[in-house]
Amino acid sequence: MGGARVTPVLELRGLHKHFGRYRVLNGIDLTVDEGKTVALIGGSGSGKSTLLKCANLLEQVTDGEIYFDGEEITDPRVDTDAVRRKFGVVFQSYNLFPHMTALRNVALAPRVVGKRSRAEAEQRARELLARVGLADKADSYPDRMSGGQQQRTAIARALANEPRLLLLDEVTSALDPELVGEVLDLIGELKAQGMTILMATHEMDFCRRAADTVCFLDGGVVAESGPPEQVLGSPSSPRLRQFLSRVTHH
Image 1 (tube, rainbow, N blue to C red):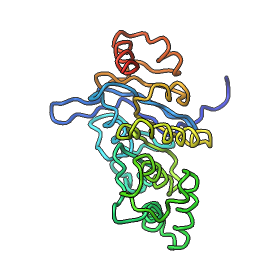
Image 2: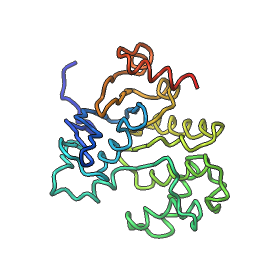
Image 3: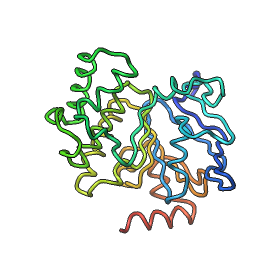
Image 4: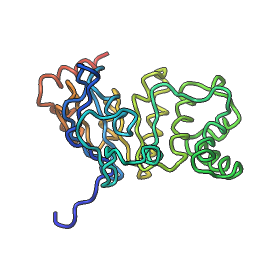
């Protein structure tokens, strides 16, 4: 192999997160390399959402370190707001501002955070809405859009500040089944364009197609990790086999 080791975009080392006596994460080691998609799978309560919240410092870690582009961001002296601006985050619920059009929802971050002029921010928002297939919805309010369209708008908004890393937390779980595909297709396109993605998902077919690495979280640890064909195709632990039989046969 030879050559210098490339610095991962995100690296979690020995990550623990406790809420009082409740231990959600119990020593997570995880690496997300540039341009790769890492999928977190596991039952509810396995720690996927907490891991994502710790990754962009929405939750304070109990123990362990997080490195972002080689810099330790769990260091108390770090400017957390500056770090968070490098992440694009999308949750299960679309979290769009209902009183703003799709265009204004997407243009908000470039204006407020990026200090761009209104014209510039709106131009960027139009480009992003076109990129997610919603050029014709710029002036629509969220309640006039389908769940899939709202979620694609939320992804466009997350892309507005040109993040280094996209964090996606079960972004299709609140969608009607027929709308799931359009959001997953978009994520696949972003990956193809070189985006670095860490996502929690229960869409196993998508993991097989689009993930570079699948991490099975169980009891707050990474119980199994590797390429999708290995983790999903020939799981080595009974817990993972049980989990996969549950999610693939609904």
